[in-house]
Image: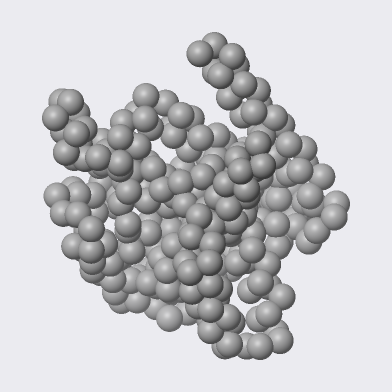
Length: 315
């Protein structure tokens, strides 16, 4: 047992080491703004994967946490004069708070009923974002200042902003990894695999699901807040149901229930959107839909899942 644990720890250390090195050198080989968008969506997809991949709960309402937190962070930084780090904290708390409300309402249901309740609640948030006076309506909140980190580091510089975003992503990803590999995460997997058995063992299943929902929503809120600072904008796109569908696509494409899969899926989708937006226009949506269909039919375990299965067959 000890060698297995030691091997697992060494693999985790290697993964985080490579991730850290890649993050540090990335702005020297790619455009920082593109990388920041990728990191925001990678964290968003990882947060969603915690809920669907490890707890088995399909939410169609994650855009509410992502976009709701973006609006709150943008307003506090722009109108209230808060610093960027406090804006991120506030956005994360708002995401977690919305997650607690959504979870409390939806967690008693399962399957398609759970998914539809989260979608309906997310549409309420979209309506509020459209109608409330401080959100800017269809124009959104524009010109959000990036400010200075701790009053010292000017985040208007793209390189400085990138390293800040990477640090936040790294911390958020590490938290999700630790959650998955903790006793709490093992209980979530047990609930996903056989909920009646978990109940028979004495676990309060609804409480575990609710906590997982809140953590996932908080991390989604953190990702949305970062995106609002990076692009200096919070818009209706962030709270639209299309965003919920997009994060599902990222997670399934990369590999549901894997640690690195959602990040890989986010990288593929963001890169395709970046490359194809100017070339094919609105046909990007059709291409994304086609990719989703192909993934579901031919690569059901996603990119990372299929690679892991191939490695196991070789070994």
